[in-house]
Length: 296
Image: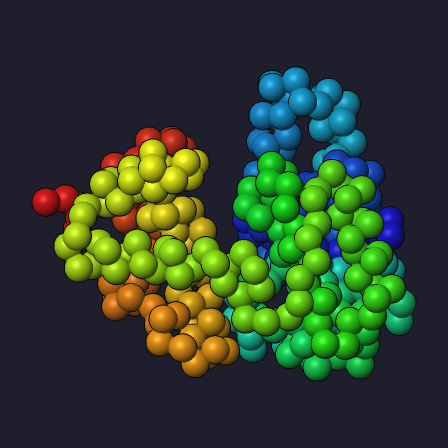
């Protein structure tokens, strides 16, 4: 699989494009506007320079990586010769179904169609196509160039051949793939999101403050990042969407999102991406402080 198309040039999409391009694949990165694509290339370039500075790669590898990426605003052109397409669009079912229906029409018959979804049913996504045997989940972790895990999600109709091909490809990218079956939240978010939700409830009910909750989990449980900071990093809107998928899929009230999370998303306090969530962030800086709403 040498020709790769990535649909969506946001945080996950540009990270996926970065990794494939750095391993010698020709990547066509697709988004709806040239501005978004330019921003993605700028991000990839900055991340590659960081790797050069840390002596993880040579400058010539950086140049080759950028040279392996083309940008496109017309999806049908970008996927016309693809061996693999990876969708990394918004975590919304209607958007993904629309994309996969179009991919099925325009991608070659033998092309594998993968979704980077973190919770939505691969079986449901595959039903929008005429090739459910070639539809699979490739759930990369953020930041993609750094994190080793890829959850490989086998839908109800995904063939063993497709699954094996994606497991082998993920390994060739230097990742550690784990095969899981298609149930809401898969493994990562079925376990992670209830913990994050409970941390938000702990704040909501006044048990402890933002920094105190995160400190307990970092120092007591050896987590590299506290659950509230992690929620900000993921995006509070994404956390809410995943919790809705879990709640709808299992019908269990333990997955119901905390009212505080709902209110914050409604107020567009989405975490790092909006510069404020449980913490407030400074532009182009790693510095953060507890958001004003949570300062006692």
